[in-house]
Image 1: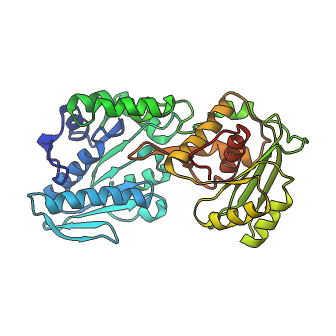
Image 2: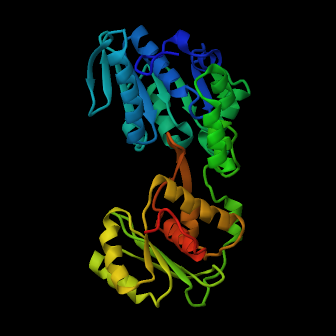
Image 3: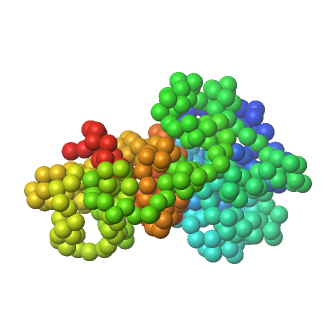
Length: 396
């Protein structure tokens, strides 16, 4: 393989990777393991398209931060590579103009209406299983006048998203479509991924996450770690018993402060949700407590508030979020829900649990709301964690 600062050339791709991307079909969809080379392979493909003809070429990702990753990788490769093909690069718009006049633009699919209008000569849709279907429709429309080619890549994420259904059509032999599946086995065989890295991921990630991210095997519930059927089994009326523990997620920006209390049987018995100043938030939290153990998100702007609360109630503790501590917190709630060790009323809590998921990162996974808020999920997870009364690296 080439140096990481050099552009991967076609003959540097391993055979299965090359066949998945550089085939003659107008459309190619690739369900792939993380770190299997799909991104660099498609960066090579879009550059090849842009240097062989003059026009507009797009790279689409679900959110702006993901476009930055691909833009920076291609720009770095071109700047340090042997081929001098760049005329200019605009880092604020994520646009690279080549010396032949072609433009490669890296765009977010967050607002599908912004993708209509232009004539595009070739495109890549990255992380497609996490992209809105409306964005795919918009990108497809831009390829009509040029009869441009399209590559769709991503990890699998359940069986209900548009990428999964389109992949099944391509796999069945749909005209002009090519289907490929790349797993960690292919990446290890090609030398682009180490076995010990896969072994570590298998040991540290939940089984359903590992299967989706490394084996390209979809779960029934997509990227939701709690599982729909497990959530539904935990729905029960609000308990009328006294609180045993509390969990509070403090408002950040446009979010809400949410407090959830569990009784001695881990049933939700109190639910508070509001948006107020820090001073009023402090008074409201204190007013709901009667000495019960309480865990509060003390990350960032919440730290000073938690310090003041601790001076008024010694049973209040802070929880600082890191990538590791949040994963441990959420996975504790996952186990509680899947084992039906907790119950909660239908409504905002259930809605947020149903809308919760994960996205892959360079070091594992990031748990987050797929859209909207996750205040209820975090508060419930903090209360659940506090109820188990065990130490955590996040505690302080």
